[in-house]
Image (tube, rainbow, N blue to C red):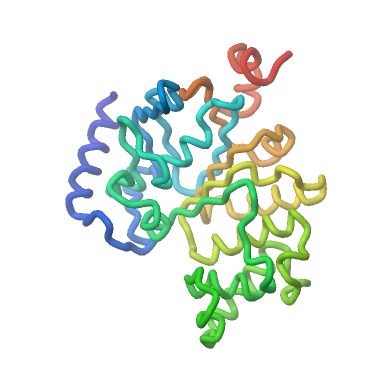
Length: 278
């Protein structure tokens, strides 16, 4: 490892001693002094002899929109599972900012640190309206009961209006979430994640099953979020990747195979061989 990374690692370890594991910190507490919001250092994971991640290293800059591509079984989902605490690695380190060692936190605690994850299948309250779904998210509650009866502040109502505009649902706040199109459900869930003001969003195949128009609107949404949030997007739709990509990381057999702009990785013979084809 080069001296810069060694110095950054030492600072993280020192900061981790000051950050009590399990403490609930505000997103603003993420320390970005080293110019990284997420850093994986030689992370390995195996399942019953299968090497899902093999000394994977990855770093994401604040405000960056990073696309992750690769064949099935490349380790993309396992990587996200490690970042969010769902899977514990056999070895390696995972840092959120300069001081938060994510391996010291439980899965339920990591979301409170300013990190949000969206799975491929949308997860919304289908029996509630779009507004009520966002209302629960703005309140920071996943419990439907009494939470919906608590009055919203003016600031919270303004935030919901802002989110409705952002995710293209301002025309249907009273519609039941179960009646939305697939793409609209995806946008609603993204809005619910944004209500928690995460600094980093992990998005797993966000345009799978969308129409062309919905895919284009999703691209516009992600580009509008770039800079305000860091985004890590795992996706197979190469036209969508081409629309939004700044930097692309190609995973294969649990390791980084190539990294760079989309034209650079598309021209890489190794990527052509294992993923893109000729």
